[in-house]
Image (cartoon, rainbow, N blue to C red; front, side):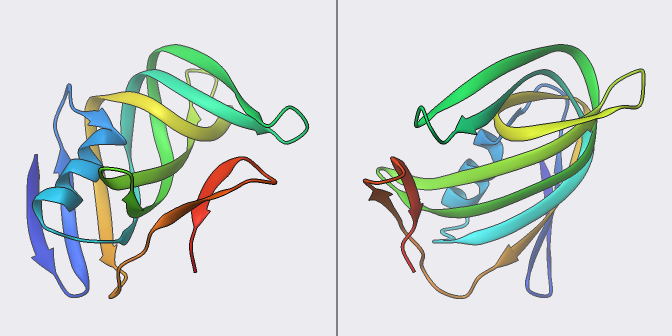
Amino acid sequence: MGSVRVEGGWLLRLEVGEKLPDALAEFCRAQRLPSATAEGLGALRDVELGYYDVDAKTYRRTKLEGSWELLSLWADVADWEDGPFAHTHVVLSGPDCVARGGHLFEGTVSVTAELRIWETGRPLRRKMNDEIRLHLLDL
């Protein structure tokens, strides 16, 4: 992983084999960032995406084998349980150039991932919403 400090945050480059969203959360932990947002692009392989089924109150997961273009990544990082948690969504495309997206549970960098991390300027936490059954930002 390479990083450089820029106005308002960091530019981050993940290397082949690093895992998202874990690497983003670990970077924030190492920098002692209580909260942040991130956007990015690159390429991932062996991806696990999810869709939140509101009626069932659970994620429906799907695995995408092989390498995928990371067209867009958006994440917010907030404190949850034992430290930073990166709530991450992505849009990907494969050989057919058709977009697929969802909540990113895991993806391994296959070429690179280039992220822009923005400091939010204040600590944020996640708190359980009993009606939805998700840990939402506690604003």
